[in-house]
Length: 535
Image (cartoon, rainbow, N blue to C red):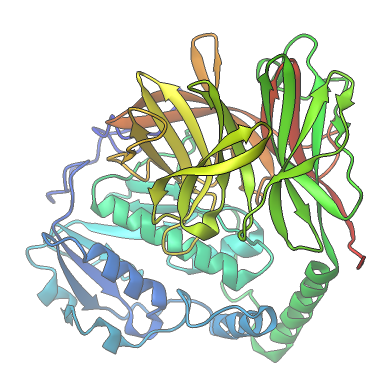
């Protein structure tokens, strides 16, 4: 049986009814009003402080702290690893992974475990404490079945996207999310991305808005995906020296080599990629570049009998992206892409659409902290800023859809750090200009495998097919095709039906986006890295 995600049916947890344990488990979908958080004072970190600050913002919620001494935590050399990476890569500290002092918890009531937990709705165990009797149900956190932060480091070294799970007293998942990271080569950066999204997951669970299942129907692991020796990170100076040499080699690679993104195109004769569900046998043609720039994020629009392709153009010399456009015909591009929109900030993902007799664009510029609407005055040029659709949000790949008499806006949101790719938010409005209302169940999905958009939603045979980025293997690693099962003001659900990656017909390491118009189809991805020489 296929399982879906969403907020509409929360009567069961993990596909089965919770076992009776004698405890009054909070009703699914309801907010927790009183919570005690179990912490180990010797393993306190910045993410614990941020979590407490976030979940304590509700005026109707009481948050208390209980100190426990489970004797676990990260290996002793983990902090050395983090310090080395911060020094070599210039990463800011303190951060979510930095050790914190108990004095930071002065605003909260603190006491022994047995004295504090009385009268709570939930006890949130973040210390991996031994099971002790409590009057309230205990929610325990694990990553790929490994309690505590050690599971995150295990996933990093195994190069897999970890599944975070909050489990109730009988081990049944209360909230599940597959976490993402922008970098899989720098442990500290990825570790803090995972911690930031863990905060999101826990806060959503306490608010009654989290999902107990993954969108592909997979179970949250009860045991680690593979055996992992927690002492196997390597103790002592010898292991730290080896790690430093590995980081130095990665730094050299980052400085002198980079992914060569490219756009592929083809004339559609017969089924398109959504109907094929595999690469066409004829393969793809490359949109040529001069080696001094790359093209990515293709968006095609057919207008007045002609096809125009919009792309992100990244010039290595300028170090930022602009939006460029080129006319297309069945035999290929008419010339080379030329810039049509440039701002002080980096631009990408030029979501272009036609409405009210005009052409509009919502480019990604997450550095601005807004989602903006532009209008073409001399298509494909002459773009003028028309409106701010959403303010105060670090959003990626905003995508519009008109459905059910309303407009819907999809975007992944980075709140409090973490990945840009794993947390899907929705807004709805009576018109594409707004006003836009956040979905009441935001975030509607936490899944690095299917949250981030990969192009326009396509109507096909009465269904809505949403291209999504599968970033479990890194940013833009694969393309997923998700069927939208529910989209209304009360809930959202989707099911990923197909995953497409690079292959013989599309050589390289990534498959990132999908767009089509006027009998032409476009994708993008990257070829193996090549030296990036000064010009």
